[in-house]
Amino acid sequence: MDFTVSEKMQTILGMIKEFVQKELIPLEPEFLTKSFSEMIPVLEEKRQMVRQMELWAPLHPREYGGMGLNLMESALVFEALGGTPLGLYTFGSQAPDAGNIEILHQFGTEEQKQKYLRPLIEGKIRSCFSMTEVDLPGSNPIMLDTTAVKDGDDYVINGHKWYTSAADGAEIAIVMAVTSPDAGPYLQASMIIVPTDTPGFNLVRNIPVMGHAGEGYFSHAEILYQNCRVPRKNLLGPEGHGFVIAQERLGPGRIHHCMRWIGICNRAFDLMCARARDRIIAPDRKLATKQIIQSWIAECAADIQAARLMVLHAAWMIETVGKKEARKEISLIKFVVANTMQKVIDRALQVHGGLGMTDDTILAFFYRHERAARIYDGADEVHKVSVARRILKEYEGRKVR
Image 1 (cartoon, rainbow, N blue to C red):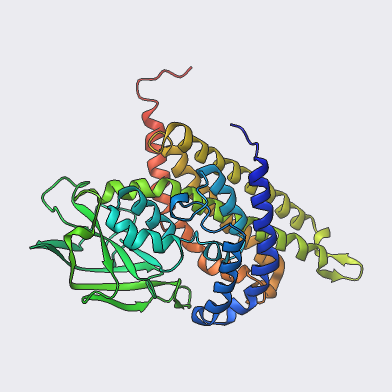
Image 2: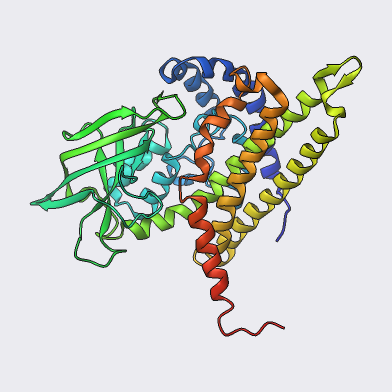
């Protein structure tokens, strides 16, 4: 593995980090106290600045107005942007749009690309991804109750979804629904584009997460599909290939998630160290003089470095041998980095004491919203079992001395 970062990428990363420090972090107090709709004007102003700097949509295709960075390059960008909740949105690389853009680019028809992909990349519209269901395990995407039944030239969709992130204000949803119930378990579901103004698409509520329902992009919705009729041409890829397409989306998506989490680790670590150096605990004594704090700092530094190298290695594996051969590495980083992030945020909050519990720093926001990292895209336990089985299979018939 070559850890060299090109001069071009060093310049790009330097510009991004400077922008985050000067333009986005100062907005966080306002972000933590205002609704998303109140923040839109200033965020659009910052987005326009990013476009003028030619840093818009780093991971998206050049032919549609993005920067076209490869997986390793975009991983570094996600780390640089992850330290503030405003980073990815301001640079046009936020989930779930990023994943939806990827599958539209790979599996969409030319009509779908012109109608949905281009305005998504340009930041003119937002989208959501509607898969998780209320009464079924989100970690098992082949278990779905939502159906899409053919009726002439249409699909009629019925089902109950929740944790459809960023549905509030989105123009389209990409919905996972069963279209071929008699096929094998991995060929039953399809992905279908549903404009959110379609009759029968009902946004029931924004789900309160740790007491905060959120609004707009920063929200998770409960959706009820009731005889929701869309044209069959809204099918993404071949019918019955929803699970296959989902797997294509998850590999690079986990790299992006994990590097964003590393960015959060870096930010929490910086806040922790600065607080320890500044906090007076007795005359002429600072918190940083306590050995337990020094131990936390050393452990967190090591954990962040180890997690970061694991993610970069997984990204390198995907680029060199492909997603299928990198399955073990992809699963490993999902639970390792999520837990590292939780530990670093928790330590940073503890060092801040009562201040850490308030919204006077960004730590409480991270604590509330990033706990879900150990659940979505496959719970920790699912990934651990999957990795263990894969590893144990390598020992079948193998003699170890």
